[in-house]
Image 1 (tube, rainbow, N blue to C red):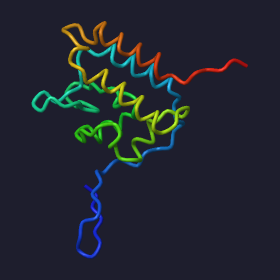
Image 2 (tube, rainbow, N blue to C red):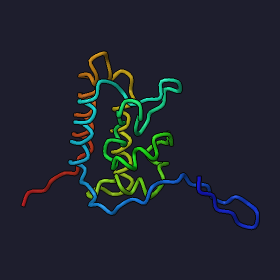
Image 3 (tube, helix red, strand yellow):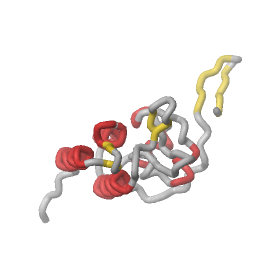
Length: 151
């Protein structure tokens, strides 16, 4: 942890994360497609089996949660044990994954819903991400994608 002190009082404590290289922000459509592909290709959820909490990156299996799957690998590996919800991600990490074509609040809600698709045990069975999970992703797509205007 990176701690900041002021006059002997701890004022801030931040998890250490690697220096994040600048990269082009993704649009919501790209994020959705990456998350969908990642979840469908995984045989099971990325979770800590003892605590039953989501992992951004499971070092034993290489599996990633919805948000972990859109982070650069080195970032997902470094925060694998943060176990924080989307809105409470450290700012520099949240900023990496927010869709470039959504307002911040809408983008956070969109990411939260994608993460819920991963976290819900009912969306997984012995074969992996099931039809109920896929239907949930389709609903997210219909409700959250920015509307296109015709030229």
